[in-house]
Amino acid sequence: MLQIDILTVLPELLESPFSHSILKRATQKGLLDIRVYNLRDYTPYKHGQVDDYQFGGGAGMVMMPEPLAIAIEKLQEKTKYDEIIYLTPDGEKLNQPVTNQLSLKENLLLICGHYKGIDERIREHFVTREISIGDYVLSGGELAAAVLVDAVGRLIPGVLNDETSALSDSFQDNILAPPVFTRPADFRGWKVPEELLSGDPKIIDEWRHEQALKRTEERRPGLTDY
Image 1 (cartoon, one colour):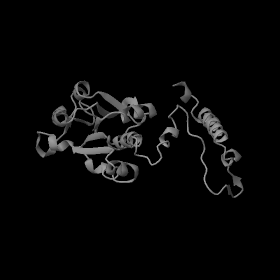
Image 2 (cartoon, one colour; image 1 turned 30 degrees about the vertical axis):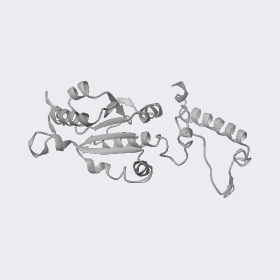
Image 3 (cartoon, helix red, strand yellow; image 1 turned 30 degrees about the horizontal axis):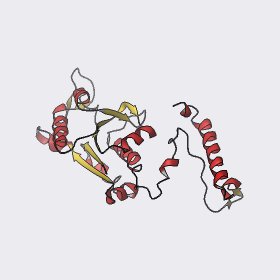
Image 4 (cartoon, one colour; image 1 turned 90 degrees about the horizontal axis):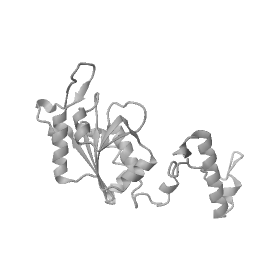
């Protein structure tokens, strides 16, 4: 089982993503344990304060080090984390190899940033890995955390009904997935490729591989260089 703890100032933002579909089934099966913690429960300051003005001036607040340090250390008393991950735009880019790696872990702690980010000292002394879901800025790290949990959780054996499904996803072999079709075989004169109707697994596999390579070359030509 993979346990993912999430530290956030807005736990309510994460209620819906984890209460439906694949992640809900994963938790019900006991394959994934998602625990959301409110950072404000750990702050020593009045009124649940977790942020303050940044030294040196400038627009935007910064998440204070003390609430974060207290929360992380309290959680570490109960759980030994394989990774403490900070979701941040300047982290390493989340991709399929990263999700594959994380799906093999047992305990992860995700820190959701807000405002202008978290105090650098927390990043230096507690965070073991920093991950970005793309080259853009969100209002907070909760949506990024939800994306990471979904991408990682679906890879856990037993989560998907078809164990081979995740293996044929885009990016698994540094190529995009091939086109897919379903019934009817002839829709408005637009027909399914004959190879997929042949019933020959070898012909079908070859067609899918060729189409995957073609699509990758057309849409993400640099992907196969990784």
